[in-house]
Length: 240
Ligand SMILES: [Zn+2]
Image (cartoon, rainbow, N blue to C red; front, side, top):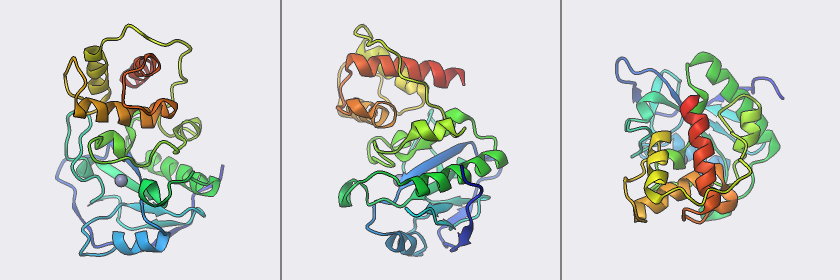
């Protein structure tokens, strides 16, 4: 475990005031999906682009602050969690440099993960963010986003005290109905439709869940393994 990373300031103009009375209760992780850290820094600080995040972490662990935490950075876009939709208003956003699925998705290096872990621990010490509310962009925008993606190591982050990672249970669950699965996903926070049969939105919710919690089963179907994982994660997150 490393200490607090050295943070370089590279102010972005892409932010505004958080609405009065909004407290920060979500920590949201992204990948940049661009070919280099420089390209991502340029875009996230380009006033024309209208996008930003509070922090950017390169693959070598270098960390930039783009937006002050008290301001609303523009990183989540159209999103929801637990029925709330202004995710930018209530979150701190961290971008991880990675080419992403479009340009050659690859594992997040240890130096980058160490820097991220230290930064997250600092943020969690400053803001009352529950472990169950450390989220990925795909969790809050399953119709549009895949980041930080199935190679992101949520388990090791949780071992360092950032977010939750219930260990997968040993049993498959062949009996969970599709409707129950959607209800569990919605209760966890996902924008899952209340439907007894597969729909496009249901498939995207299942894919988002699998990408985050069971990447070995990233198929968009309600398999017995995914059903068991939904049950485990639901139990862990709704009691946390
Ligand atoms: Zn993102």
